[in-house]
Length: 265
Image 1: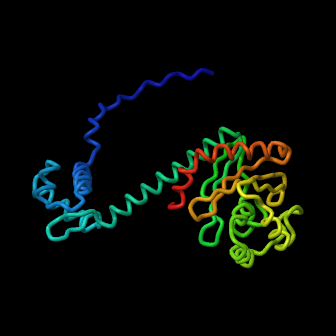
Image 2: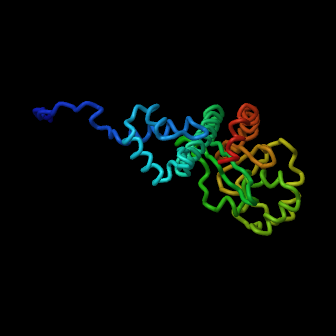
Image 3: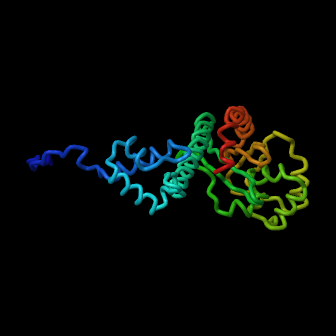
């Protein structure tokens, strides 16, 4: 049944965009930007002149920004404060994360599989980024990745890059345990497998972490940090695993710069 159109209510005329802006915030931001341009600090009179603010207004805003920690004053000069530095650091960290996420998304789309990036840092596995799609979902972390490095390709690849003492230390803290019927049974077998892993070659596992899933991980050395990029496939596509892993290897050389920056995230 068609609906009868309703008569539109009178709409008040839209206010100018500037009416929705808060002038004091705009002026404070201009002062912050101006201070940031002066590495060795600047006095209030100079800041007022360069921002076009009346001196009393500049003084009032500067005092407020100092009180809130966004600026600090030393011998009559204003510098960025700790709060502003934290904002800058957080923004830089977000940018680095975005760069890594973009790199993984490129590999995901090029290969048509979920892609993972992980590091071994401070004695633990850290999955830094995962890129998947509804049609190719990532493996669900049903058992803590940090505690089950022996069972998944990401963990095995990272452990293979460590020296023997570091491997044994990790396994002392996170002992080998059965996750599926295909999981490696004991640390001796795992260590022998890790010793046999060939440098720069994919590390593969088939249903050791998750039934119905096969995975491959490519070792990456970023400085002194062990890292890896990995892919996963449903077991019925297991015949694609090695060719997809080789395709991932081809992409990694072009992405090392993007991946390296994630060390500081």
